[in-house]
Length: 576
Image 1 (cartoon, one colour):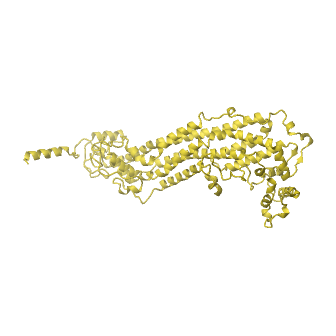
Image 2 (image 1 turned 60 degrees about the horizontal axis):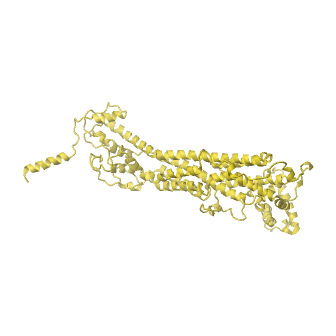
Image 3 (image 1 turned 90 degrees about the vertical axis):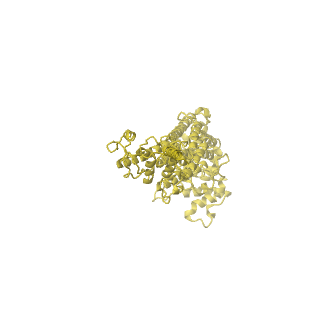
């Protein structure tokens, strides 16, 4: 080959090779960028100097002093945390706003339900309602306390409500008698067999419990999502991460090329190393988001909170009507089981018809007569908007490195592979992009990650997500994990129309108060209660008519401390 041709080829190759930095080149562009960030130029060289003092950037000729390198390393960490905040802002805003909207809606809905009942019952029952309004007010106090996160069992709340209501209504439909507290206690204790309100308490319990459980779980879930994002986004970057961030973002500045962006693949490797622990949140995060969506769908379907709140007054009115219409049969059974009550004073001995005076009969108001919306919106609109915003959140933590690196301020475009910073100079980045998660960082070429030491805080966030997801999944089945026992845990299914609670079977009246409920007037320690003996004598007298076993024929195994339970079991036929 002629010498001239060889020299021409060599000159062409030299022209295509990036020229190394040389001493004496101006650092004006670097100084300008450094100054714009608010830093003093006292330590910034005017021209490039030897880079033997650099610890993070290539030790070539540089425009950075040691102090500048340290300052820019801190700046790179700040830029990284800002990028995290910006990327997670959509999540935080969504959880914050939707939590506020749903919470405001559910609270106002409950307030409107109470107001509706108060208006309806005042108009329908007049003074009889106002004299007993505390029974209904207490119900809503407890419903609000449950919704607000209080340690309240909805089943017990509703059972206590029906127990108090049956005592009040029983007295009102039998004004010709006087009833002691012990007598009314007997009535409420046997409400399960009497079923004075028909099937209404069971229906209301299912509707209200499912709706309030789902509503509380959803609002709590939105608050959990907000807290998880806030904690995960406020991470402390490890030193190895900070070094890698400095190398990709500010080493080009030290080389006198402030506009040069890191290659896209370089950025991905750095971000995957820095966000390795956050990526491990992704699986549980996706389960959590799915569960939020599913609970929201339940609320606009079978567990509709609007319908449940709106039905409380209607169902209670139906229950009172049922007891009034069947008052004779119910009273007869009570008199047989609890004994004959004392007649009232002569001036009060009036028939139920006379005692009602000019009050209008019990009736049910149509839904059109009561408010049905709250907070200026409706449940369908809220749920639709929430689902639209939740679904894009799936995969957020896995895709976070891509989200940051897709910002043209953070990295070069994927199509600009040959004109980007590859960690050493301008040119193509050759290493492969590593996988997602902590374990995959074992071969990360940019960030040294100890895969044997998972981040404790991230593990805690994973556990919080699992707990929240478990609560949401149980809420889809109408169960509250705070009040689950072995029976409830095995008794719920899906959310369709055939779904039933475990205690929603014949023989288990959900409105019957627990037999272990303490008496309202507990006996003095020095004065034994006579209630049990009196009730036992009344039931024994009823049994002497041949309708069942007497107390004398109880099994020998019925010791004194088991007497109340044995008595109830032995007298059960009386209530059939």
